[in-house]
Length: 409
Length: 227
View: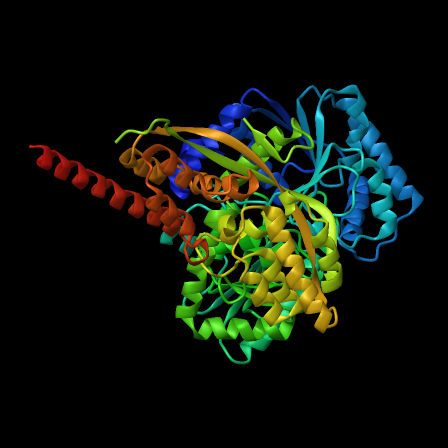
């Protein structure tokens, strides 16, 4: 994958904002930063780290990225943790906690931390904080999921690690839990130059649609997400069936799997079973490198759906808004920050609500176009990678000035 | 006309801290507001100006927005939305006004529960020089167009209330260096609630350019009179 230079991002944002980004970079140049997460490919965190780490280096921050190692039982445990932190009833046994602790110890034996700042992403590698006393680094736990209503057993177990960081960062204020360290929020972001978001020629879009036997002359409803119960793919099929009673349309449910998501296969099988009798439902299991396909499907969509039951921030929504698509999405997680109802998209709370709003958009293309335009501007201001780079540089500065409200450089 | 001291443009970046305080109804909300520090008040009454640059008038302050959308107390929301930060020179006075409005409401009504709670945050501001330094009206206008909206935010809002300067930085510089009290007053009187940040910047530039033209005409008339 070709790396983009920071200068290539200037065209997406105001020149003044770009100048300020460079100004901030001058203040933090020379610092060293280590990012650690649990997967090199698949999922939003890995995608973003792939993009931001080279950019930080170009901006003068010596940034490295490590991925912890784990076997299937470990990722099974962390998936359970993930669901439990989202509030789903999950059984957590002592044996599972032991698997987590053993994998953490194995990773600690292989890693050393010499940087100024270490940012640990999500619960899987959170136990690495055990190395803190041996380092000079400031440690930050970056939580990408909604921990507002976790299962207490899992939260209490993880808190003994999470509560030892110098700072915690959440995607929205309402995702956060009480912790002893200062807590900040930084919105996630998308990269407009990534294969998943770059502008596409019509020919590129058509080629993808042909490959998946989709008919561009008929309305196309698209939900892009991992095959995960929390994304409610079966609810999307129900929604589509309600729409189909009134309007001819096709449905695409497309997503990849991630190595830390063993539950995905089971959900995919249920979705395939539910879709098997309808040739207009296209269930596409995409490989990790299918960014071009996702981009084309989002751009070809008449309406993009994100009918999640729970959601982290919902970067697939951000991607659709950036492509100026009308979005119908559940009012969960970080989605209401992105979809301002009736302005940048439509928020829904049920299968019936989603179906009604989709019918409205199919039949009112001008309203759909206008919403798409506002959505793109909303993302330009708040959810592009340049803003995220800026926020993390500000965090690096703030970590050096604990307890200060105004820091004059 | 050249200033005695240059105007130096700064910019501010912010990191938002989650305080952990949450209000589930208006009574809890009132109790929390009473104890809020200046950084929290500043964040919640100002950040809509930074965040919603393309939608003027859609939001005023976070408190009003929450009462409207989550509590459904429309009259109270309107009263809170009507708090104009330009009427205040101290954040403590803004807090007192919010408390006064909430207490008056709760003395007549029960504390309605919110659909979703209010999460209090606070602002950590990082202030830096932009490198733009100006000595006269024209170069001031050019620089104001060139610096980012965060710089405008810093000099127009942050300096005034957060750093306790009582007036915006532009007005202070104009008054101190050019003695133009009328222009200083006009800039201070601009109503930020009806403009986007882009529009606010353009209004300031238009006022300064007009004053600059008047200065030039005044200079020519003076020269002609001497001749």
